[in-house]
Image (cartoon, rainbow, N blue to C red):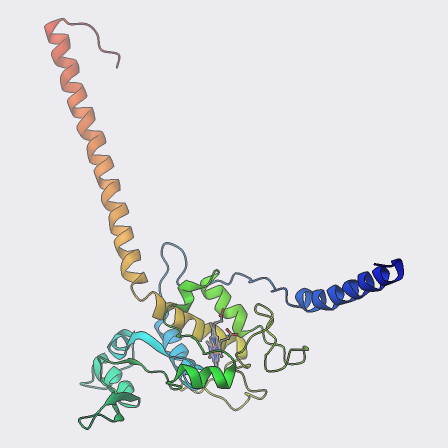
Length: 271
Ligand code: HEC
């Protein structure tokens, strides 16, 4: 190889590497800030009102693409609904379930849908992974365990939902997000949300909606958190009681041994 050719090849390689390196640099994911949640820490609990609002956001903004295939409608009965007279949480959950169309195969062997019942799980509206992948480049993942399957958990989901920047340059067919710089998921927030209301009439900010739906997804992934924390406290108190009892039992036994040894004129014990 002549010297001139070598230089040309090297400079072409350097130019290629510079081009290849540029998007890699831009693709570096931003940090996930930790948030304060009601459900973290040993006494963590869910705010039921927040879970209700989060369900509402999931229904309005996420379920067109994402399923919650491990969450049964029956589990919504415990979300602390304000009940009418004679109504139970289960009735509310039943009503929610009946709004969903559940795919099934009917008696004629054809694909059909029927209204959801308590025992069903949140269905996947897109239904078909191939079609979803063709539309979005990637099939939207099921969100049932998302809060536990990503490093950072709830903090990660919150950072993702608040991390869109539509003004940022992005590759064709992808979107820019601070924590996932090339993402197939479009920005779920409409530019103007000023007339969007929660069922209680309040107008939430984008951050509030992200926070609420994240709490809901955390509950979906970890519905027994409160029960676990309660049992944790019971176990700690039980261990504490056992420690105190065994300390006094030791004192009583030691005192008896001590006095018996004294009576027998044996060697002085150390204590
Ligand atoms: C228009 C369809 C669509 C909507 C609406 C949508 N998503 Fe997504 N979502 C996607 C797709 C597609 C992906 C896969 C992205 C990828 O891997 O590049 C995704 C991925 C995700 C992920 C996983 C990101 C990761 O780390 O892999 C989370 C979490 C998520 N979405 C949450 C939500 C939430 C919460 C909402 C509602 C506020 C929502 N999505 C609304 C299409 C959607």
